[in-house]
Image 1 (cartoon, rainbow, N blue to C red):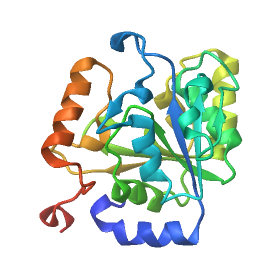
Image 2 (image 1 turned 90 degrees about the vertical axis):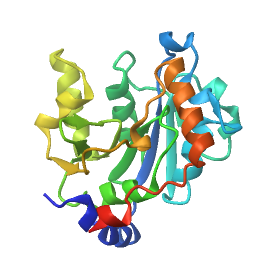
Image 3 (image 1 turned 120 degrees about the horizontal axis):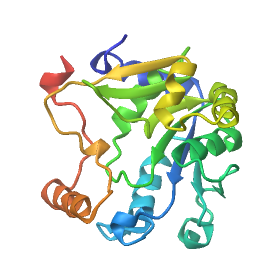
Length: 226
């Protein structure tokens, strides 16, 4: 496995040679956030969805949003197409399935709508490791983040098999059915890139990160680059 500190340059070249899609998963309302659509929470004066699209748009020729509440996303009109789940009730796996079916390119970067601190460098690193893989997922020790990962259209049939067989429908259950590559990141540090806004406490933490640092999007320090 190629470690991320050694593929940053390759990732930038890869994305120039190949074309990728980006897919934002704007899932159901959060019961722990008073039933609100997490992507509509405002951080730094704009919604989290807008923050995500602002990062992705310069990197990708195509950015899609998968949402069952398109009427709430009028502010994205003209910026990216919005699609509803083709199969209802599958959660994030259903969003990934719909994104794979709708995106123009063979491979795409998929991200949840509640991750406000996307890092272009990390995204490019994942894409740079996508050759020959069906899934590319970041990993820190035992922690993995399937909703900040790369998926190819070769995952469509395995997802359909999961649905038809009625088994577990977690995203990570797809990994054993396809060619999955994990990109290992250095342990022992906090990654704002993977902060999910699942509770009001998470939201306050995100506001604190933004106020303290402004979030420059720099993932690796010079000492970590090696």
